[in-house]
Length: 309
Image (cartoon, rainbow, N blue to C red; front, side, top):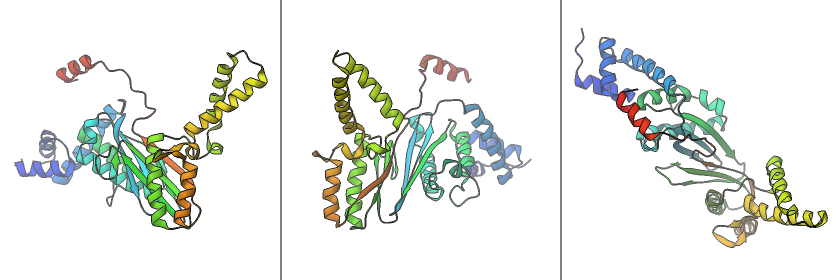
């Protein structure tokens, strides 16, 4: 029987991120063969991942990778905020964001993409990390923007490390003007989007169903006034204009100068850059938005942990 030394166990732990006792057991099972032990742990990690797949993962990190003319943004979820502070998890999210640049934000393609320079895929790496850290994790979404001329700007709020945080924004600005000035203004727009959370660049790009729901609510509210239908219609149109000011990027008050709308700020920036600027798209990812978080019974969780279940 091969002798399992502390240094060998430590080497395996460094390779895999698995716990010390798991590493020792893997080496014992494989007669001290390092590569076989790695495979043994991978298999065991995948089995653990399957058990944890049903648990809600609403924490984690937003990851962002950007070049001068393209950027990608991803959301990778974990069960607890504690994991978001794990250097291995942070490295994984950063690497996935860089892979999303090549995959152009296509989630299915990203899952199958090579992780870094290795042979493992992004999906395989996430499964291995689940086994290593012991929490359910998911690659929830990804997006990509690019421009032929102009700039891609980005902003990360609540940043834990470069390109990693809780709210991430990428925005595309097309222009033939001064790229440095466009990029500088784009950074301001990205910060505005993070703060104001617009739903679309302009009214034409709002989801028609979203507008229809809002209109129906406004109609019901206006009917309570008891006024004639013609008056009610004017009331609804006026309130819709106010609604657009709240949810449409170009109509929102610019957070850096609330006396200006984003449209007016864009016009000023275009004069400074020497050419018209058009905001062609943006993505704003806020960590965990839209995920149902079931009420947890903390006492039951503690009891389960104490019993080893």
